[in-house]
Amino acid sequence: MSDTNYETIDWSYDEESGLGRITLDRPKAMNAINIQMQHELIDAFDAFQALDDEADGLAVRAVLVDAAGDKAFCAGLDVGEMTNFSTYHEKKRVPDLFCEMCAAFEEYDAPVIVSVDGLCLGGGFEIVMSCDFRFATENASFGQPEVNFGVLPGGAAAQRLTTIVGASRAKEITMTGDNLSAAEVAEDGILTDLVADSDELQERVDELASKLTSKPPLALRSIKQAVNITRNVGYDAGIEYGSHAWPALAQSDDYAKAIDAFGTDEQPQFEGK
Image (cartoon, rainbow, N blue to C red; front, side):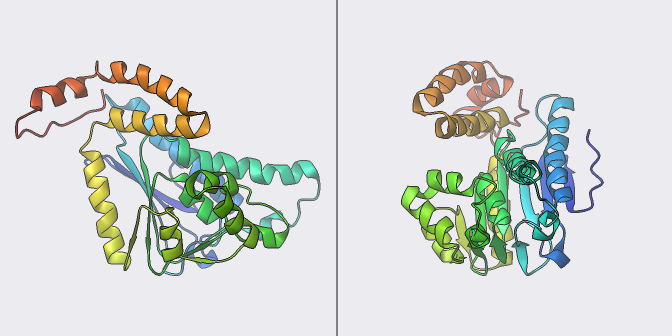
């Protein structure tokens, strides 16, 4: 398994529940994303994948993402690190690495749930959009201010927003660089749920995590893959994937357990195999 002794994030895994957790942990810098954090976030998902590879079945049922401190989920990219980049190829490494990091969230097989309390700008907002389920408090605020620096969002925010809120609203958010309240982001359909405060945030995330961990993990992962394929490739490709995934899942031990328990009060213990 990957080394999980990180400096910019906190990584943990609870074997009993099957829940992994990643906490952005640079609170003095408002959890700004430096190069080291990007590499550590990529490695963190590799570590979860290693747990799956080593397990008899599937180890990780879902991953929870949050941030340390009480001011910000994430203030965006650590701009100070980029001041020494001068050539095109040096600057090209910025979006390349950031897109790789966002893909680690988006493409990890298990569901990823993020909770936001406080400021969430630029790259922080892009991390949020790369997760499957997004919860925030009324205290949260969001924005993509990259246009004010003369660039577009480097982690594909404009592209992801287009699939979530439509082309016109995606252009408005990224072209104006305006800060958005949590209520506005919820109204746009970006959030799974908007809650009053941090206590309710934890309760709501725990509620969803508990529900997801009770489901057959192979089925959850196939559903995530089907949705992503439909969005990224197309409707027909998504249907084609589903037509092959369904019979494969119907041969699993978890499927047999679910069928045996159907119509009874029994709650099967699914193992991801």
